[in-house]
Image 1 (cartoon, protein in one colour):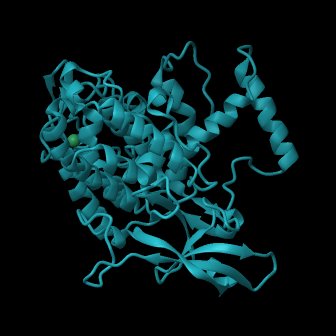
Image 2 (cartoon, protein in one colour):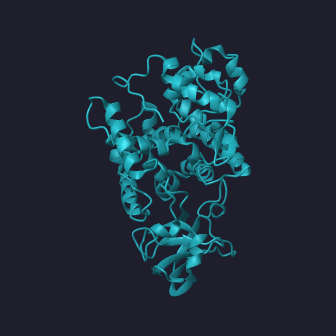
Image 3 (cartoon, protein in one colour):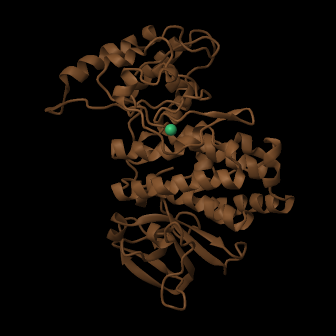
Amino acid sequence: MSVFCGYDGEKPPDLNLYLEPFLMELKPLEENGIDIDGKHLMIKSIASICDAPARSFVKQIVGHCGKHACERCTVVGETISNRTVYKSMNVRLRTDESFRVRRDRLHHNNVPTPLLRLGINIVKCFPLDYMHLICLGTFKRFLRIILNGNVAEEDRIHKLSPDMIKRFDDLIELLGEYLSSEFNRKGKSSKKLNRWKATEFRTFFLYTGLIILKEVLSEDEYNNFLYFFVSMRLLLSPSPTKRQIKFANLCLRKYVYEFSILYGDHHLVYNFHNLIHLTDDCDFYEASLNDISAFPFESYIGEMKRDIKGTIKPLAQYYRRYSERLHIEKSHPYQPTETRIVDSLRENSKADSFIMLPNDSIFKIFAMKTGSEVIVVQKLNITYDDDGSRKEFFLRPMPATDLNIFVCDGLCNSRTFLPTSVLLTAKKCIAFPFENSENEDSKWLVIPLLHTM
Ligand SMILES: [Zn+2]
């Protein structure tokens, strides 16, 4: 691990000097491999998690407003409403070779990056990081358009009416009560949109937004959101399959194309354009988007900042606190802790007691005693249509039930027993009331938790 101490938020003045210790450590590892637990491992690729300005700095390429800025394809931007937009979606892709020989001269700065000394695929080893690209990028932009109208003149027609904004805020507050203890932030009102954290945007587009946006958007706008929603549910699942990744790519392309028709092509800026390349990262790393994002680093930076109390010798302060922790814990302080589903379940809680078994049956835990071999549960009845099929919350781009999202009528009156061992394979769920959401007799929308938030 290394920490850089800069001046007034300035970038390091010399990239070679900045990256030298990193390269000196990585180059021998790349050439000779490393022995871990008796196994000899070779390094084939790395994932450099950076935001767009940091990527352009370390790769020595034009900034994200440049006309040749896309890191994945050779699209050439054009200026619309004083911003650079990228309209083409099917342009020749960049490759490691085309980067190294500087085929697109206008993509590069004058001095090549020292990272070229490594054998990594320089195009693919920089994931696009959905925390910056989506949570603080495209999705924040979308909510700004519909909520605060503090955007370009041509976007003001998309601002929601005061009644709809009030409904939006009421639902954020109401549904926040049903979010489980994994969610540290339950959501702020639309007035505080500029202070929403990346996790709040994520919670909104993966969970609460599915209900809230259905009430406040037009049908076309909501259907457009569903293409984005489905892609994110697939790409953020623990291990998306090749087929799911391919489908998510089709959905994202449709989302971007239709977004430009609904809200205007001046929104096809760097972040929006990059949505069509997002799935390449899941493909390359064979991983969930969540495994190649800045979220864990962002929360670690929060911990680091707490160790620094003033501006005098910040590196020395940090190093002292870090050494103290190592001494006390006798281990690295940044060990991910394994969480088990049972640890956060609570009896009869409206946020922490819903589980889904592998056969899709859904239960609310009514009683659960430590050491007991059984738990007492109430079944949640899935709603069926007249033709006997499960009721779908949405059908396109894929049926909601294919994502294990179910509409339910309510709790079964009788309680029953389940062996405690079911918790080993159960998924924890969120159950939101909707249609009459203020009323306990309303219908329920059950959404499985994707990961620890
Ligand atoms: Zn591109």
